[in-house]
Length: 319
Image (cartoon, rainbow, N blue to C red; front, side):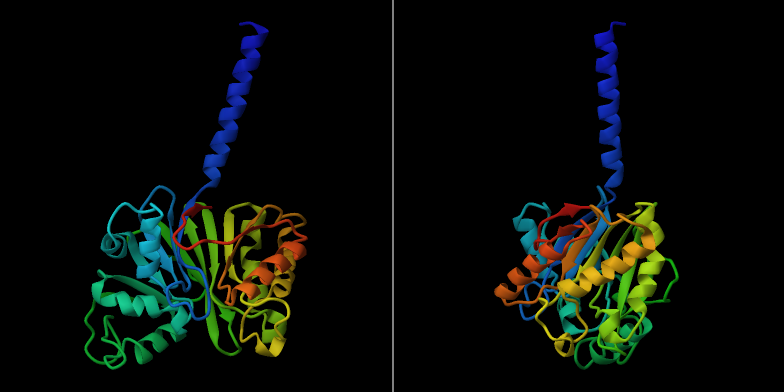
């Protein structure tokens, strides 16, 4: 074999190896159905997540469902009907907390939906049963709670810190508590697909304002996954620009507080561990001028070198 052929073979091998590593790093596909907080009822927090190259999606929060699916179909993400995505592709819902901007899409679409599981922590599930699916505010489409349960949805309560298989998928979930205007609780969901993970946080205030250690405990739990590069990304809210006074945060983050929290995570996972790491920013609150200011502040304060992703409604991306 000539030197040229050896060099060519070596180049091909290295290229293939690099390509293989890149492919291995992609474990999840995400379709945002809603990305904002606030008043836009057609674009509120909801993220479809599935193992790569499958249609076994779960929906992380459910503020907007139908309008988001229609937007995804418009963008050629799905080649089936809105009904098929709703009934066949979404295998279950994970509700971080029971505020309407995170659950209204689930409620409104329930008559047209198929049987599946709704997952939430005990306090969240109690609020949904007592205030929404209670046969007064809305028909009880669940399998427990007030009135006459129609048993379309199985209401499954998640135990904090316990890994739970997700029905009709190859994924598992582990729930962690968050503080969203202490003592009101929200939830973070750690989703596992084989040896890869994504972390989704519902609404949360910073530990310093909430007088809490819930984010510190969450960062401690996931730091080993950051260090081992098994955690593919963190979905985390940033609702207001830095000018928002602490007393008017109402359990939300600013760019300044996000970066402080990420510095805590880096301290736990190792220097430069977050360089190039995917941070998916959720729950940006209108008006547009505030969102633009927020994005500018995040760019300026990103001294950790994280990769900041602003999801677009209906536009698929991979992690």
